[in-house]
Image 1 (cartoon, one colour):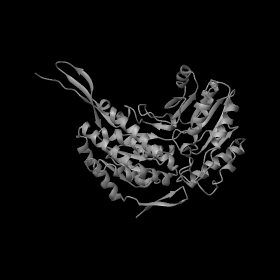
Image 2 (image 1 turned 30 degrees about the horizontal axis):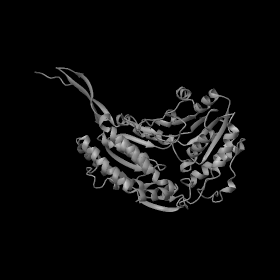
Image 3 (image 1 turned 180 degrees about the vertical axis):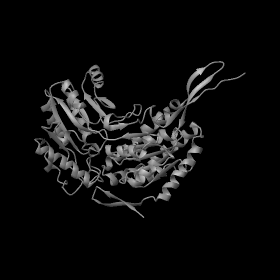
Image 4 (image 1 turned 180 degrees about the horizontal axis):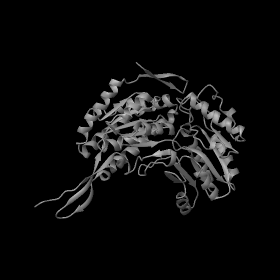
Length: 462
């Protein structure tokens, strides 16, 4: 029997222990998923939506318990944890509201002799490997459209957030969902390889590292199935000279530091027009030094620890390396006395005098640290923003809407923002380019990820 231990970053002690599923248990879960799918795909869309709506209501009712678990499992300030449930409800309600239209048959040739159409057929078992950083919404971004589309689903959550998977499962109780349609398992990476390779699995969704995404593709092998992969990010912002500078500072600081910088679309690079660079970094320094880095279970904390000691060590090492190459720290870290080398409390930091020869500006940091560079013009900003192996989101801060729309077309990114960052509009496709991955969640396009076109050629003989 293998035991999985979850260490809370609050005090680096064991918070949870879970037994990992055996090969026999994994096979049983997959078999139940296959049986459940056969029943579920015959269920009407109206009935599926009714069940999913009950699930949404049930999960919202678990808000207090979920908030506590997010706080203790990943270290997010308790004052901010309920926001994830608000985001969950916004996205889920939207996906439910557009489901029937998104899944309706696509009419083709229709006349007295033919009634042809394209039916969106569910795929089968969807295997979801969800990340810890937003443990509810990243999982349910897939769960909602996949289930309404008629698929069954197996959720494997991060070893850091096993309790979140259990609470999601609990929310399906008393909804009327058939057995086997939604299941969760606690497994290790080796077991995931077997599940992905299993011919009964029809689609894989993974959020994590680029290396992890490559492993998923490897395990799929020669099988003709698709995967949705959201991998890395080093999301940039360009602050133009005509920007509302105070608005830009406030929002970019939040975009860089919220959740201790552990957001897939968090801001990690900022390029500022040299005309306003000094004013910008002065303002950014001021707002950053007012953060309260402390025990996240305290109500007045707005910046908690990063998720684990190894992550804290990586972030600190990346900044120290940048310093050795000429970068400077803008923030006085003595203001944050809780931070020590042997804990997960990493001081919020702004690095200046940085450049793209430094790994700090090229590789994902995933922590409360951001690099800021001055730029001469829009062309330099564009080239620096695109000088990255990633492409999840990018933003421009300007009062010129037409410029922003034109500029955005030249940026290699899945989502382009004007005067906003670190937010998902559920009506827009959530996708990325380059090493950020493939696939799409949210919007009407999400339903196409979990269905296949089946053409019906109906000739009427009278």
